[in-house]
Image 1 (cartoon, helix red, strand yellow):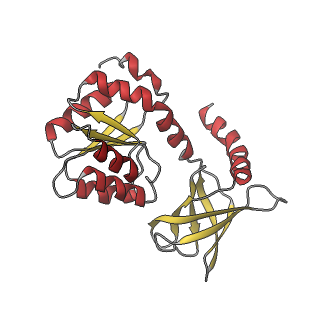
Image 2 (tube, rainbow, N blue to C red):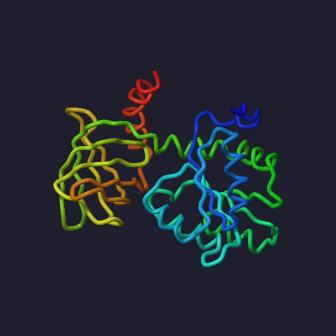
Image 3 (cartoon, one colour):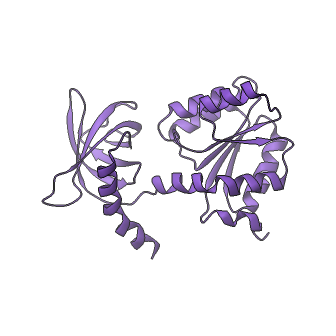
Length: 242
């Protein structure tokens, strides 16, 4: 087994990375390099299949080739930013061009970093080191803790009550009397401590599991509510790592 590359030490944990490139050889090279950096990589050569997968599956970072048939990298980045689970996942655009208009379009679509061709081990590991902070922050935001808390979920016309199955700073997974459709905007009232007023958080449904379970992502959380949620979750995070 290969020893981790010394430049990979910028990352503290193992992360799941999606690589989308219509060139199978390029995917294989990326997979080998990311694996050497102790990152789990998933490679896909069909950008349309990748877009469908990104709706339902969370990744810690995404590499997209800029030029692909059927769905180019910039447009795929736009679709990623429109989905719930990966709206804030760091996106790296792989490109052989340095055209300012193209780079501006990519930034506008939600791309965070660029990896310029030709691809080699040094460039990829250097990029991992530079982007480590963004990947770490995103991973912490979705670090899910298995906790059962009472929760009320309200829409403009409905009010459901249920119990959380897991909670993170970015959202929660809940079992209620029935699931709401994906994309539904909601107000979440989360009881984190007995005798205290519940946290009031806004969000939307990003995935549905069966008839009564759904994943919610928080949106526009006020700083005080974010602080209270973080203080509530921190002891449980530390207990899991002990």
